[in-house]
Image (cartoon, rainbow, N blue to C red; front, side):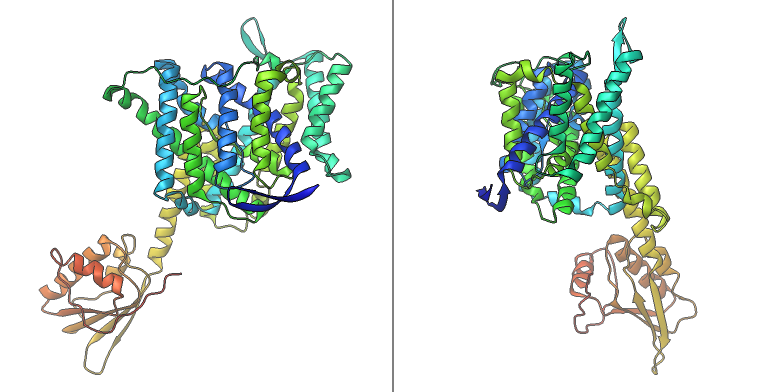
Length: 510
C-alpha cells in the first residue's frame, strides 16, 4: 500500500502501513517517559502527556524534517524542576512560552546552521552519553516503594519483570530476521501485553506510574505578575531550556540526516520547536524538544515521512480521551525492553572500533562529552565544552603550521613568504620567524599564501612594523587579499603598516 504524499513541501514516497504502525509504537514508548519526567518535576501527570501531544503534532507538521519525533523530553524538563519548586507551575508555563520565543528568534535569524560546527567526536560523545542515560533510566523500573523507600525488586517480582523484559528484547532483536512487515517494538508490546493479560501475571503496569485519562488540553494563561521582576525570574530558565532544546533537537536532526541520507532544515526546526513550546505554555504542557530515543524507534519501525509523528500525537490524545483503561494495563516491562533496545541501537559502537585510529585529543573530547552527558544530564553544557575544547585544539594545531620561507633578492631586500593563517594562536610563532637585528634595511612580508584573520594578527603586524622602525629599517606587506586589506584599512587609525600596492591576491579557503 504505497503512494505519494506531499505534506508541507516534503514530496516523498510514503508507506502508509509503516507510518501508521510506527506512529502507534512511538506513542507507546513516549507516554511512559513523558509521565515519568512530569512526575519527577512535580507536575500533574497529564501535563507531560499534553506536552507529548502538542510538541509531537506541531513539529511533525511544521518541523525541519520528516521522521523527527518531539515530545515532553527530560532534557528540557530537568531545567524547570527548581523553578517549579520555587515559584509554581504558572511560572513554569511562562518560562516555556519565553523559551519558545527565543527558539523562534534563533530560527528567524537563521542561527540553526551553527550546529554544523559541532565536531564528530562531540557527536559520538553526545550520542553515547545519551544511550547510557536511556539505559540507566530503565533501571528504575526494577525498583518499587516499600515503607516509603525506593528499593530493588526481589524474589518473584524481580524474576517476572526480568523475564518479560528479556522476552521483549528477544522479540525486538530477532523478529526483523523473520519479517519486517510490522515494527518489532509494537509486536513486542502487544505480545507481552497479551501474555500478562491472559495469564493474569502480577507485574508493574503504566497505571502504577500515573493515570493517563483526562480531557482536551485546556487553554490557560499563566497567572503571573506581568512585571520586570517576573522576567528576571523566568528568563534564565527560559534561556537554558531553549538552548538545551535546540542543542538536542538539532543534533538529533543531524543524526537523522545521516541515517536517512537526506537533508533537514535546522532553522525551520527551530521555529517549529518554538511554536510548539509557546502552544505548550498556553495549553497546560510542560514543553519539550525532539526525543532521540523515540526518533530512533520511529526510524527503526520504517518511518521516513511526517505521518508517523502525526499518528503518534493523535494516538496519545485519543488515549487521554478514550483509551486510558486499556493503555494503563500495558506492562512497564514491555516498554522497558523496547527502550533498552533503543539504547543499544543509539550507542555508536563504531566508536570502539576506531578508537585506536583517532587522534588522542578526539578520543579525550568524545569521552569527556559522554561523561558530562551521563553524570550532569546537561546536554547543552556537554556539547558546549566539547566544541570549545575542539576549537582550542584546532587553534593550537593551526598555530603550529604557520611557517616562513626566507630569501634575499638581488637588491638586498629580504623576503618572508608566510604560509598559514596569522591569528591569535599563531602570533607567537609568527614573531619568532623574524630576525629584526640582523635583517637588512628593507624587509618584505609576502602574504600570498596566508591571511590576517583577526585583531591579534593586526596587532602583531603593527608591533613588528614598530620594531623594524625603531631599528631604522622598513617593513612592507605585500600579497594581501582584498579582505585582509579591508581589515587593515579599518584599523589604520590605531595601527601603522606599510602595504605595497600590488595586484589583489585571492586566498582560497578550503
